[in-house]
Amino acid sequence: MFADEKLITVPFDVYRYDPAHGGEPRYQHYELRLAPHTPILTGLLRIRDEMDPTLTLRYSCRSAICGSCAMLVNSKSRLACHTPVGPEVKEHGRIVVDPMRNQPILRDLVVDQQPFWSRYEKMEPHLILDPKHPMPEGQTTAMSPAQVERFKETPRCISCAACFSACPAVEADPAFPGPMALAKLYRFVVDPRDTAQTHRLQKIQTEGLWLCLRCHLCTEACPKDVRPSERIRDLKELAVQAQGGTEAGSRHAIGFLHNIEERGTLNELKLVRQTSGIGGLAASLPQGVRIWRKKPELTQSPPPIEGLDQVKKIYSTLKDDKSEES
Amino acid sequence: MKLAYYPGCVAQESGRELDMATRWVCQALGIELVSFPSFSCCGSGFVDEANEVLNVALNARNLAIAEKAGLDLLTICSTCQGMLTLANLRLTDPKIRARVDAALTPLGIQYRGTTQVKHLLRVLTEDVGIEKIRAKVVRPLAGLKVGAFYGCHLLRPSDEMRWQTGEEPHAFEDLLAAVGADPVYYRGRVMCCGFPIQFVKPETASRIAGRQIDDAKAHGADAMATPCPLCHISLDAYQNQASKAVGHELNMPVFHLPQVVGLALGATPEQLGLPRHLVPTGPALAKIGTRAHA
Image (tube, rainbow over all chains, first blue to last red; front, side, top):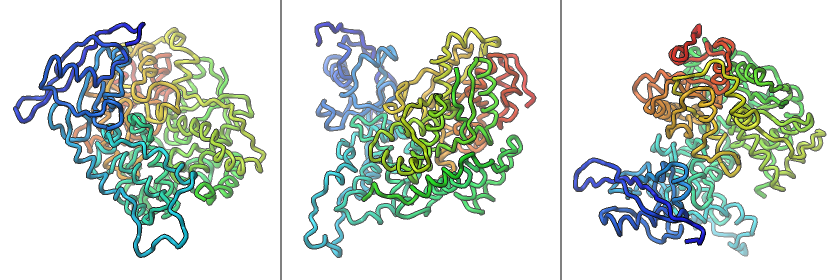
């Protein structure tokens, strides 16, 4: 404890649930005197050691390396060993601890991580080297610093699943692989030694890439600054550049790109056609009419912006510029 | 106070009520809005997914327009706020900067990087100030329980937006309290509205929207309010779909941020464009003793 740091009272409300022995989920209240910088995990272990040996939680290294102790701290997905008690008590007056979201609860703070790992495994998270197309003679497999720079964040991932727990797309749709799985996939897509880039991009476009909401809740939750939402954005751009508009998601991104080029501003009605085609436009007609009754300008084309020629020139310079990838 | 007004596409098209309410509130508070018909769309996150550098260049052009006029830029959309702020940040990367300059310099556009991007929520709570707004309230929204719904890009990534925390902000609730409403705290207030995948998988988008509305309702909200017109589309214009997705009628009036402030400062529902909403705001207005013709 720092010399000038006073102990504070830390009220914990901890989720308790033991389905094997019956009973309903409940919160159990404990209070400890702790220095503000004390990690929440330390508090939970003191509760287990000194007050209640039945409290069940998963942990190992206590140093934000192993990724075992992710849980909800006042509703945020966090590593318990990496989150101090002081700021939480200051903001909320207490610390409510729950098991992670989006994974079935086994007991107390321990979840079944099967949904997290099974989606990760679908990404084929290993180098794919095609035996029919070996590395050309004399080509080294060593990477240049610039090539490594492109995936410098992802090796930091400790697979704690905090991002998976925080993700509203995972919560709403089992087809979404989750932030960590996609960030890891990105790492193999840009790895110059991997030979399956096309296969990986084609597969992921139909298997959930475009369900990312870019809400960045994963990036907030990540204790290692992997920034999964930004890696997913990178994957989307790679997919669009490599394969064009093959899916609703990529068609929407490309449609938006073209839409803005025409007038400098969004033509809402036309965008629906660009993304969904005439069939899609027809399918969305009832909803469109409903909105149009209140907002009739929906069907009017907006006037072009002043200086549209500048926008068009920016497009012509940068539309096909892929100098970053070289 | 004088600001370059960046209304964004939706407030000039299907979300015109947001533009109406913004102009009314800014006039009432002495904020001069300077319009620039040369502003282009911010790309809404979609252009960024198709071509990051092109998106930064489009926004550098927008930022340069405000810089040339010596004005900071006012946004009224969480997504515009996010995209323009990110453009400012990404321009500090020399590789991106070089490619953007290659497109802008031949057009005679020079952006030095001085334009600050400010969302209306921030201008109201920080530049105008909560106390000044509280002092101007003529119709306190007393008894109205309002769930703020922030919109992701106003908050996150929080290390880049450099404002409030990405998961536990309070500016909007502070403002709601200042105009006399009872702010409702619920998890969904910082979650996604589903809009980004409305055209990818509508049923999932609607399930997400429905979940947040249900959450606000479970915490007692009579109405929701959002600083983002894209969230407004999901929560209001598509609320019927959200109701279907969650299996029950939601009936949740959803205000735009300046509409809530405008009501408290004395605007009529018509001046704020409330009759344009898909979900009638009447039940919420009745709670504060006001009527809309909708």
